[in-house]
Image 1 (cartoon, helix red, strand yellow):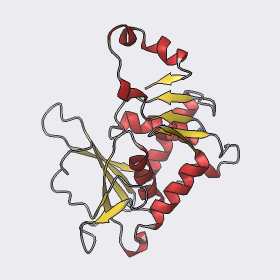
Image 2: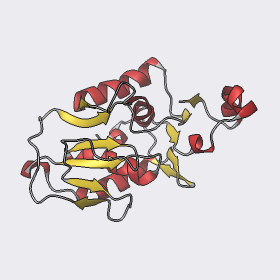
Image 3: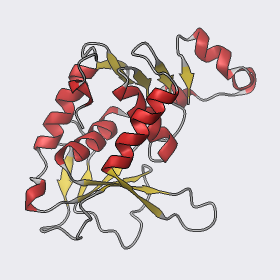
Image 4: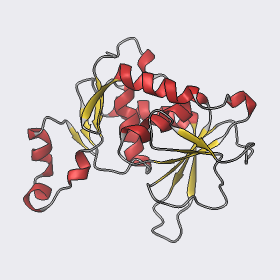
Length: 212
């Protein structure tokens, strides 16, 4: 949960490029700690927290804070309805100062102790379903990708994938645990025409090591 505790990680190095600024691992950890402290203790009942997860700083902070506090994140695309029958207890507000809003008085669900995240499928074969992901699976996925790709602190990913799908989330997690960084806004500019045909060259020209 606290990727910054790794002894080789440079906490003052960049972790995210988001909302027009560079956020260090130290600052991101501070923002996550603040957001996690606003959530009720998990010992009083684990809560389901909806996060409309776009490529922005408040969404990433909310997602990481939920994991740190021991609750369960229900990740959706911004503007999407919450899949039935999952009624969230809280929702992320998209604000750093007041990151969560309470929707229920008591926990609405009995959540499995290993459950960490509910992720939506694409819905390409019908209505979107939710995939259950455990805390150990999130960790194994992040460290496994970082090891397989030999990610370094100098690596920065240009994220073009949505964070509410498993691949985009894997890019975020693997770069954080490796001490690298992710540009959340790079994909917003889009790739059209010649830029789409030569995306890899443009990413290298812009100083990125990975396009995801």
